[in-house]
Each structure stands twice: as C-alpha cells, then as structure tokens.
Length: 391
Image (cartoon, rainbow, N blue to C red; front, side, top):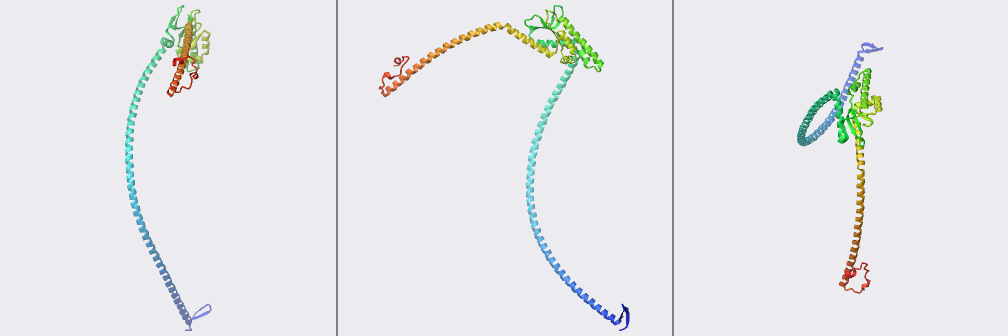
C-alpha cells in the first residue's frame, strides 16, 4: 500500500494515497451528480409548472379565440346579410339606372337621328345652293371673260363707257334736262349734254376709257417698261383732253368747262395718284376728269340747281297764294270773333234764366211751408227785369 508510484512537484504519491484520492474524487463526483440531478429535477419541476401555466394560458387563449371566432362568425353572418341586402338594393338601383339610361339613350338617339336627318336635309339644301353658286360662278366667269373680251376691243370699250354714262344720267335727271349724242353747231357730237336751268349753254360730257395704257402701266415688270407705259398713258389721256377742249368747248354755245368721264374708279384713282401733271393739264384746259361716283355727285348738284330754278319760277304764284291765305285767315278771325260774341250773349241769357229759376224754386218752397213773412222788397235785384215774367 505504501508502494511509491510517482512523484508530483516533489510530493511522493503512493498507492494508498492514490486510492484515497480516487475515493474522494468518486465521492465528489457522486455529490456533483446528486446536486446536478437535484437541480435538474428542480428545473424540470419549474419547467413543468411553466408548461402548465403556458397550457392554461393557451387554453384561455383558445377559449378567447373560440369566443372571438364565434363573435366573428356572427358578425360575418350579419355582414353577409347586410351585404346581401345592399347587393339587392344595388342591383335594383343599377337596374333602375340602366332602365333610365336606356330610355334617355333611346330618346337621345332618336333626337340625334332627327337632328342628323335635319342636318342632312340642310346639308343637301346647302349643297344645292353650292351647286347654284357654282353655276352662277361659272356664268359670272363667262360674263367676266365676255367683259374682258369686250374691254379688249376699243370700240366695245367705248360703248361700255357710254353705257355707264347714260345709265347714271338717265337714272338721276329728268328726261328734258339732258340729251345723248348731242350735235353742236360745229358738227361735233358729244356723248352727253346736260342743260342747266336758265342757261341755254349745255354742259358736255365725253366718255374715255384708257384701259390699254393703264393695264400696261400696272403690269410693267421693269422700270423701263413702266416708264414706257407711263409715257404712253400720258400721251393717250393728254390726247383725249386736247380733243375734248378743242371739240366741246365752244364760246357762247357750251359751258366754259367740259367733263371727261372715266368709267372706272380704279383707273381714276391711278390717274390721280401717279399722274398729277395730267390732272393739272386737264384743269388748265378746262376739262374736269370725273369717276362714276363724282359724276353722280355732279348730277345731284344739277338736280339741286334744277329744283331751285323751279322754285324761283313758282315764286310769284307762291306769293299770290300766300296773300290769299292771309286774307282767308283774316276773314276766319273776324268770323270767330263774331261767334265768340254770340256765345257771350248766350251765356248772359242763360245766367239770367237760371237766376229766375232759382227764385221760382225758393218761392215754391216758401209756399209749401207757408212762409210769407219776408216782404217782396227783400228779394234780390233782378237786373234783367225778368222777375215779373218769372212770376
């Protein structure tokens, strides 16, 4: 037992010591195992209690969940019933709305159909008008081409200007105040002669239409061509002015001024805008250029002069009629005065008659009441002496 086994840190270890240490170690292990088992048992007990508590809590939660599920089922049932009711109401409302919408849509479609038919009818009418306008436009184009062809011919152009001149004069003046193609003593024949009141000398009007020269002036593409057209236009218009001044201004037979009628407002405007020297030359030659509007104005002036002359011719007759009218007014005044006198006399007679009637009425009243105390001298004076007649 005392046999030496090994030496540890200078300490001799024998078999007895080793056995003793092993026994102590085994005892300690046993104690440790027992302590660990006790602790494990205690932990198991605590865990069992915890599991029991958790089981109770889980049971409570299950019970609460069951109750909540029951309440939820009731609520779901109520919600289902409410939803079913609401769904029924919604279906009914949707059906009513669909019926109303279908009815309104049908009416709208019917109105739209009627409106479409009306629009188509109006469209057909407008298309018919468009066709008529197109036909009229074609006729107008043909007339314009005919007018262009007419104006391209110098003789036809002159006839066109004379036609416009005659239309303006004939529409505005009396027939005896003008004459077309009037022949003068020198054998010259003017397009129109206007006779002014109180003057035997006519105012002569000649129609000229320098269309070729003004067209070349307007359509000139270069300064050289424009200058040539300007020179040509001045020559043509200047020749017309000279011809009118030499042929239609006859001292003692015609007026001192003659009119040159330009039957186009645009041509007249171009002459005044670009050829002031031509206008001044005409003024010096006592020839006045007039457009259709200015000729109408001149005709209106002639109308006013003729009207004033007719009024002067009738002045004596008007004066005599005014004198007779004054005499008639005097006689009427005298007769009205006599009538007023008669009415005044009649009023006095009626007033006196009424006074007598009032007195008779008062006497009748007194007689009815037997009142004779008032003497006759107390009665009111009777200026007309009608009391005796009334009594």
